[in-house]
Length: 60
Image 1 (cartoon, rainbow, N blue to C red):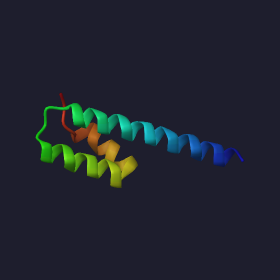
Image 2 (image 1 turned 90 degrees about the vertical axis):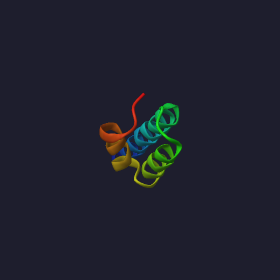
Image 3 (image 1 turned 60 degrees about the horizontal axis):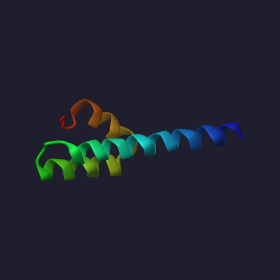
Image 4 (image 1 turned 90 degrees about the horizontal axis):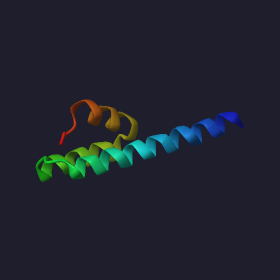
């Protein structure tokens, strides 16, 4: 039962991080194509996409 609760919490944290990364990407000054590509990466690779976005994603 605890494993199920932990997995649910972990999934929720990933979802929150994904939403945050997408919002910050949309708000950035990057070109439209760059924004779209980052959003696709974040959506198709939820955990890895957020990690990649954190280190290499658009700023500002």
